[in-house]
Length: 242
Ligand code: ADP
Ligand code: MG
Image (cartoon, rainbow, N blue to C red; front, side):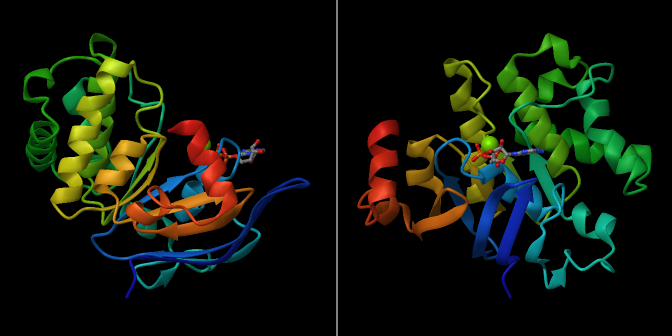
């Protein structure tokens, strides 16, 4: 059974038909990178996977449960999905440690002691053992993004969604975040990653999906889609970004 299955997904904003029939799956343990021009619907697709956007047509099935079914218990389904955005969205008034604990205690109802232990372990995983008492404003963008990753991991997600996690970072800070993501992939985490980092996609992705104009134009192993694209639109896009 695929971890995520998307069938004939359509999403419009008013008259803007953004997703025009998307079909694809993410298997357990797979790393899928989504690439494509700005405005092609990549973020909208990612946001439909945890129903931050409600599609007009089609199905999103996560771990066998159709979350687009109005009867689905959405909160429970969402708990299995971690999301990391371009903007880190940390709570500025909470310490790094508290940022990684709050959803654990409120949503998962873990005891504070257990939540703290899990938060510390995940902060260690992203290389921030020494920053647990710091506040977001005291950290670099790359460190804040790693806190956001640790926070998502602390909820024990079965799937991690990343929407251009390094796009807001100064170039010298990008590497640390990609290193953490590479490590997660090696640990077997299932990941769906929208990214402009072609070197990362080429090295880490099991599969690359190229989107343009709200459809999947081409998908396959990175050596094929990035290394030897078959479609004109993919070739044109890669010529511009590589
Ligand atoms: P990408 O992530 O590939 O750059 P997006 O999914 O963000 O593309 O956007 C695709 C299209 O959907 C764009 O035309 C954008 O303006 C539109 N769009 C995205 N989110 C919204 C929204 N919340 N309301 C209205 N239009 C939106
Ligand atoms: Mg986007």
